[in-house]
Image (cartoon, rainbow, N blue to C red; front, side, top):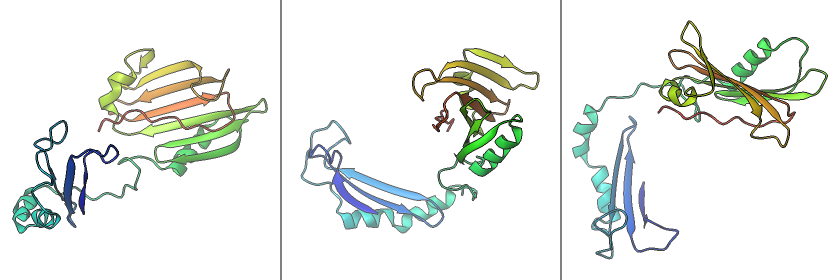
Length: 211
């Protein structure tokens, strides 16, 4: 890919940014960029165009001289992780199936959906519909101190941390009550279950990723 553009294309400034990117069949990336200024941002333009032409940039990133360096880089293991999913993340259908198997008796499911790492059910116990959501996230240990640093937190004998939150829901309108139980194992496997008194559907945002 070769691009000849500007650092701030929406502002019509004079700083030009020309770029060539090569992606090899093994997944290695060679990326070369140049500007018509001594710095990427905040520097005064010193020439009309960057020094390399588009043809020269392309020749630079495709040069055989990079091959010995690329061979020294470790190859990443191939995974079957679908686009949009985190490695090790559970699919929506599996989450929904587990949710339904764990529901108390007497609840009728009126709606359901999900995605990788997330699922929701709308259930009715005869007194009204409620939204029931769950997030399942692997490898979240790096942000445990942010998630469980305050509030009603209990540590179980096996190392799992459990945080319970009750209060007004952030979404759904005035008067909507939400209860949330947020758990994480000692090795960073997190499960968040939320139930609210609204009968519609609303996604629970993901927690920050440790990567």
